[in-house]
Image (tube, rainbow, N blue to C red; front, side, top):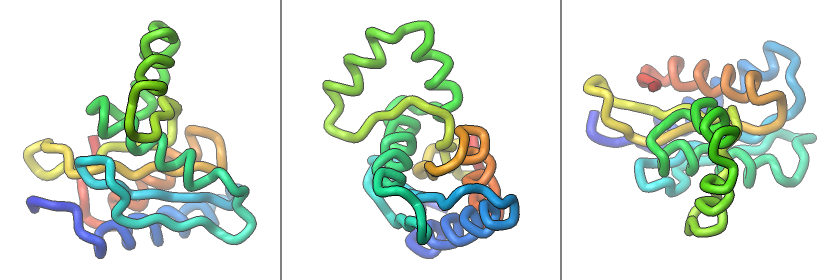
Length: 141
């Protein structure tokens, strides 16, 4: 597979939100971006607060931009807060290095994009995007 399609993105989102409902998590926002951190698709559940999509996009764009899942970025940010603050200010993309976004890869490990969520804890956000990626038949880093 050479690219992340709209059909893939919608499947990721639908299954991520279904996973959130199945677990009884708070209402979520989920965003899928391509390898250039451009939005392919997004959805905000009824009752999700206003910033959910912005935060989910910031997590996904950070993951793609730095080439690492946002859990890894959150750990790195603890060690290098000035650097990550500077990247956030200098970046043309939203940039939120917090747990809740996972890279989407092809079979060879090349990054196709990322899925990010916001609404629950970082662990919950990460859990649902992993479920969505798997349901779409895609791989994650």
